[in-house]
Length: 81
Image (cartoon, rainbow, N blue to C red):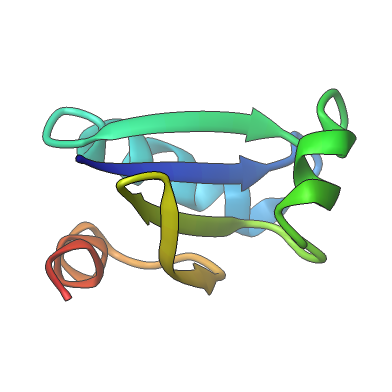
């Protein structure tokens, strides 16, 4: 099963742009939203050094990741590989 982990922060401008897109994506795939200001341990564990970062996980294994804002279509293509 595929799942996205979306690491963001309230002060991050690209995160503010990506947030609504990720809400739309969440209608088709599970998205776990992680605010790094409140969950820094999870960000460290995932080796997230900048936001926004989106990690695609399948069968509990990281498949790939991207950093920065993308369009809905780009994220769907990222998910489908």
